[in-house]
Structures are given as structure tokens and as C-alpha cells.
Length: 111
Length: 118
Image (tube, rainbow over all chains, first blue to last red; front, side):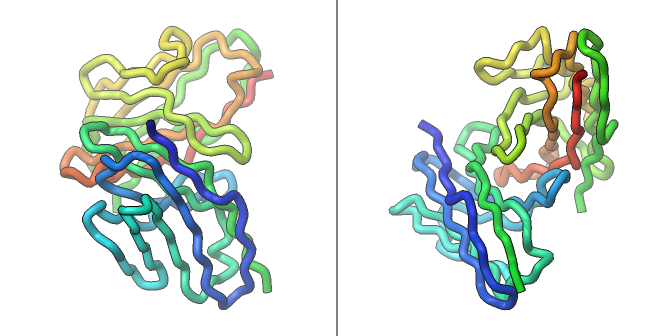
């Protein structure tokens, strides 16, 4: 079946690194995504990774994929107050258009 | 970058009325658009997949006669909530897949429409 799980809440100090974790169950996932949602707004695509990659880095964002364990993580370096938001992990399954979303991790950044 | 707009951004209506929400891809063509529903502090629930020029595909448990979807052009899909009731109050978000996206299934999301039914 299709299931994506995330921890619901993460609190970090400004300037520290944040690591948001996600697990998924479908081994036929082709792409995995991280989206950011600020209050009252839609989703903003942050980055995505193809399932045959282990890592992808984009400025302050680093995505790690462990396909064997079906584990995806998003690391945000030098976390700022503007990074406070809900972060959704999502998977795309081969042959299907739709995305399967996790419940979202609420990231709170404090001084 | 790819931009998706939704209109209206919020709407308040009386119970029993119908509400139409528009989703537009502004700078790309989208053969496929998706409609999601999000309850407070919860994830997005896919309601239906809208394909240009054909009938929408609804997810299990979503009433197609209540949530009418029309995808008449490559840049516009509409969701009509018919005979709305307070339990239909929610945040409705659309996304669009670029016709030229290839295999990445990258979807661009609209800003959402908050529907409140009194």
C-alpha cells in the first residue's frame, strides 16, 4: 500500500541545522519531494530527488535518500525564522500521476 | 518559474448554494491538474485528477456529483462544490503538472481557496 509518514513537530534554535525525516512504504516510488507550506498558503516545491539518487544538495537544503530503508530526510542548514512552516514529504509512484503526501512536519525556529 | 493561480482566494457562502473555484496555470500548459482538500493541521487529501478534454478521475469516497470538475483548456480547471454544506468548509488547493515535465511528475501548487459554508 501507499503510506508516507513524518514526525509532526520539530523545534530548533535559529542558526542550527534542522533535519526532517520521512518514511514511505511503496518501493516503486520514482520521485520523492519536499514541499513547504506557510500559514494560509499553498505548497511550494523545495526540491525533489529521483529514486536512484542518494543525495541532492541545493544551497542550504540537503536531501538524503536511503532506498533500502525507504527513508528520506531534508536537512536545512543555518535555519532561519523564515524557515518556520510545515514541510511535507511526498512520493510519486511509477505509472501514476498523483502524489502521496505525508501528514507534514511543523518546524518552529526560535531565537 | 511556473505559477498557478486560484480564484477566489476565499469565499463565504450560504448552505445549499454552489461555489466555483478556478485553477489556472499562468505560464505553462497543464494537461493534468489535481484538486486537493486540506483540513486544519492535516495533510492534503487528493480529491480528483483532472485531465484536459476528458472526465476527471475521482478518488475513492469523493462524490463526483457533489464536486464537479471541468478541465476545458490546457490552462484552466474548475471545481464546483454543489449544494454546499458546512462540512464542505475546507481549504481547497489545486496543482498543475507541466505538459513538458517528463517523468518527474513535478506539480506546481496554487495558493489555495478557503471555503466557509454558513
